[in-house]
Every structure is written in C-alpha cells, then in structure tokens.
Length: 271
Image (cartoon, rainbow, N blue to C red; front, side):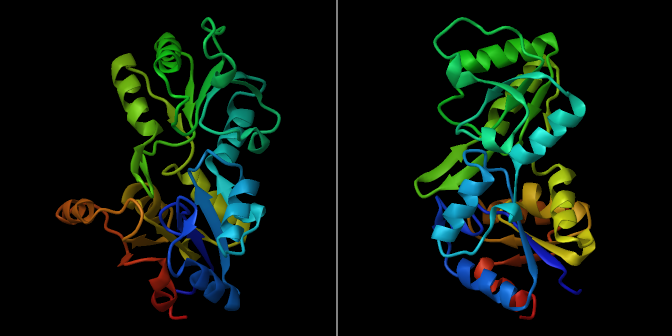
C-alpha cells in the first residue's frame, strides 16, 4: 500500500508524560525526509493544540498546531453544529477554551464550593482530574437523569504517566449511564469523526493512511473501521494480555500490524 499519510496518537506512542519515547523523533524525521504527511489525533484535553505542538517540539519533534486535532476541537465543532447557542457546563482538567471559540461555557471550577448552578442546555465532559469531585459529578448525574444532553470529548478509560495509570472520563461515564439509563454522546476517539477529519486535513483517502496507537480499541481498530491500516505499538497503555484476549476471539477484528514501538515504524513502511 502506498503511504499517503500517517496518523499518530500522541500519549503513549510519541511521549509519556511529555517525555519522548525512544525513536519517536527519528521516526518523524524519516517520514518528513520522504515527504510523508503526518497528523496527530489525541484525546488529551488538558492542553490546547498550540500547547501540545509546543511540548512535542520541545521534546525534539517538529510539530505544528495545525497538524494536531484534539477532542476539544472536534467537540466544539459538534456543539456548534448540533446545539448552536447552547449554554454549556464544562467539566475538564485544564483550560482548553482557546480550542473551543464561540461556545457559551461555564466551567465547573468557577462554581465549585457554591450552590448548584442553573440547569445548562448541555453538559460537556473533558478529561478527568481533580475537577471530577463528588459534588460536581453529582450535579452531572442529576442533570443527566433529568435528560440534559451529555457530550463527552472521549470515552477513554485510562492514560499512562511515568507514575503509573490514571483513570479517565470513561470510568465515571459508564457508571452514570448505567444508573441514569441515558447515554452520552462521545465525540473523540473512537468515534470516526476525528479519523476522517485527519485524512481530510492531509488531503488523502483513509485507505491510504496508517494509524499508529497504543490503544487497541480507541486508536487502532477504530481507525481500521474507517479504512486505515492499523499499527499497534507495545508502549504506553498497551498490555500484552489485552491483545492475547482479543486475539483469542476468532470473530473479532484484529490489528493489521503490531510493533514494539514507534521506532519500528520506518522499517514497517519500507523507509
């Protein structure tokens, strides 16, 4: 297959706690030398695309903000299209308002310690952190049970840090959905919109792209569903037992390729 472009997950593939994974810089340089376009799709919601590009550049990787597609950017597009003018209550760890221009946002950190805010039109859930406290989650559950739409930037269950795993929004969301009997809408990975937007940004068809990720379901298989060639790396949140359980299911879609790390990608692509 001709390589029209490569789509990278970031955390666990290129960096861990924003420290470069060995070989990541050299891999991006090899792609650039062959003029293979790159894009970066991330469920990271603690930083804006400008901040993410700066951190990757500081880690030795030449990345520009317009190459980065974040869950916040996708969510803002979704709200403007589906709920124009909505009053949104945002629960997120980190200030990402620069990636969500034009939205009417009330952040949970601005109301914490006070009475329950007025019922919003939409609840937005970003990445988990200290902001996901007992009172705030109780408000979200109350509104959700009343039928207020809940839009999650992603359904990620965890991410990897240098100090170990941290649970993410999907853990909380699963419980609230089960108890309320209502479903949230998730916009980031593994939803197809981000993968298709990445291909469109590069001007190539999805079947001409590789998706490289450390999450079997959210990254690799989700990319394969829209036609990309999936590459699973054994870094970040990858767990061998997860792959073994998945491989034991003869009816389950399997990753197209499994490599030890992003450092092995140039060899896989024949570079």
